[in-house]
Length: 328
Image (cartoon, rainbow, N blue to C red; front, side, top):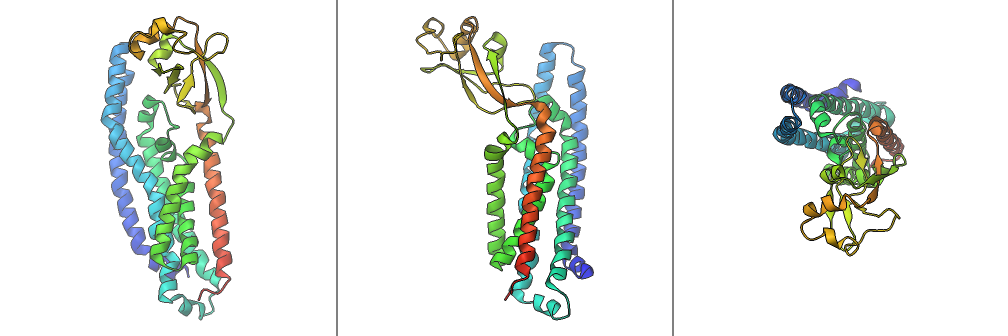
């Protein structure tokens, strides 16, 4: 059965390896180029020159790194749709599975080699691409200082491996349930996309209890955030280097903890928010933020990988149990 599985899979494997070789060459070139630009950032002499060099690196390589990340995010869905969903549905549609099962091959023996060989190939392909991209973009991520963004987190490290295995086994389960390749492919892409969109919003922020801290509204804070001077003043998009700030907007409060209204600081609000900020910075104001610190990055990677592995195991068990029932 292993040889038969390989013969059915080898064309897809050759195409995947060829695509990976091309991607590896591009990512190696990208990684070397970013490292040359990073050397200039390290060698800068003045704060102004350093800021200019950092901005130039982020501007030049932001698009290539983002495109490479989007490819990695789309890869699991593609593997689930084009490797997982047709894996059994083609044979169920054509009825060729009957010939194999009438030759003394058990259903489990027919299914397991397909799951192991094709599923392992999906994980290796995704893992290799993820490793290359993680290396290529490491200096870019270091300069950017925010590895928790949805695109960056899901396209680096360990998470893509679990995501790929989950997508592949979801495709297999969909093919057994629907028994048609095209509907199984559509369901796989839809579910994988829904999970990929939901996890960063509904799951990832709660993998560990966030830290809440008070931040003084100072001139330095002004430079790292935005100010909303509506009825109640708010600070937005506050940047805590390396950390994941969970809320976008934060109420500005006075020394007694009361929300600051526009009327209370009317003398500072004669112009734009940028003009008001220095005046407000001298009023002993503060705001609270909840965040996940930078040192939890790999913990979150491992936890999310574990979650996808659990889902993958459940899908594999469901597929094996479904195989014990009549397929006709």
